[in-house]
Length: 258
Image 1: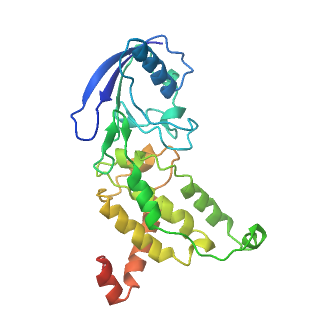
Image 2: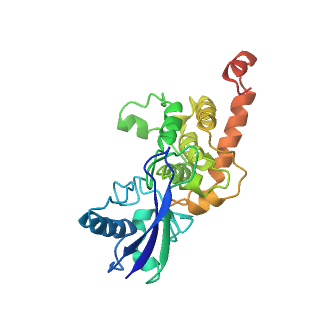
């Protein structure tokens, strides 16, 4: 298969970027999208040119590193798949494919298709740890969890932090990501001691990272490679309201969220 690629090239966050055109020739139909870029990079390096910088790690849809816009769609045309799980048979032979990085103020471009998504790490860190004294594995397993709660917690925990939700959202909101990280602990008994303090701190950090506000367009769940439901946003909003309503006036004034 042969393709024409229009790839975003940018030296760093402060420099101007541009689309450059490359030929991707004799690409196996069963090659993944990242393997296709590998082949193109091999040719570029053989010609003494700088290869296209892109992020990757596991290449199994687990790490969330392979974040890129493909023809204006986060992760490309395959629903419920990360970029590394998209194969070239999903495209037409001879197709022109435009590849760009995530577009978000909170995700500055490091180089070409690579963006800095450490804002997500800081949101998670803001949530802190759980303090449930469960002891060893046997003791922890004695805490009964309803099947519906464990299922919904696992669904939320499937989030790989790729940032597709932010890239797809017209507002650049990180509410699906933050909601998923909040929901998977909020559904479990072990997550209850710090439940409302956690949501307060994580939402505050999300705001500090300059993500946009959620208006429930729903583009986030459509782009999510793990198909996480926007129900987690509803849980986050509800818990945040409870957290603010149950704070003392002194605490509310000190945090700036009262």
